Length: 355
Image (cartoon, rainbow, N blue to C red; front, side):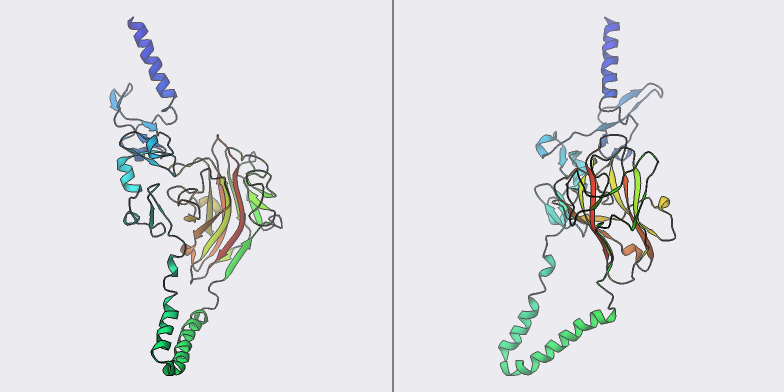
């Protein structure tokens, strides 16, 4: 009987290890020691036979689509697709706009509890004040308005004229790319000879069409992307970023990539390096924003990786290049995938670098 009970305990123990915890099965003291889609199971210490002490292990999080899918004291991180603890939620979820500290994501979506970009048109407030001011001048004294209004208009015109005159190059486009020539200005660098994870041409899978024209650059044109990729697609010509203005890169992408915000398995990064540097030493993508339904629908929590499975339409992505003002830079897109779970991938079109 004792032997049977021991065998049963061993079988249950193996089942647990080979199930939820076999992916990590690493010691932890807090959630930061685990992958972001896992948590440190501090409620259930286990005996470490080798060390002879109690230890904690990382455990996979529970998947969810709404708050009702999570147990008590857990919240659903809807953009991530799994549950997080109340303590974690207090740091990343919001209940009002005052909880949103990131200036790029100042609005709280009460339905999802996540901060989002401001609605379009929030900068339109000052525009009506100009005609109102000039209207008041006309109403107060029509005779004086006849003489004063032209002066006021002249002053205003001078102010506006002076802005572009100080630097007439502001607001210009540095580079555009739609891949309609087959990507003649781009170079593909596979991580290994066995992988080939960038193609340029007509997409026959995923969106089955381009954002504009016929061609795109894609992780695969006619099927799911490959495993074990870390391939780079870069623009052959260095770009000079001016010292003034707000330099940025924008592009449209259709995204169906396996990953999540905390620990994306497969993802695309926008890589920007100084012309004298080497690609291999550029290990972090530039920060991005996405015109998707929710701020993190297609980005990881650091907003440097494009991941997750949207797969609905082309969305606009924008990257801030202010860190490279006054420098000559090279720009590329790097795709990384792990050994399993491939999807339709990443379809890139209509790139613009401007300031």
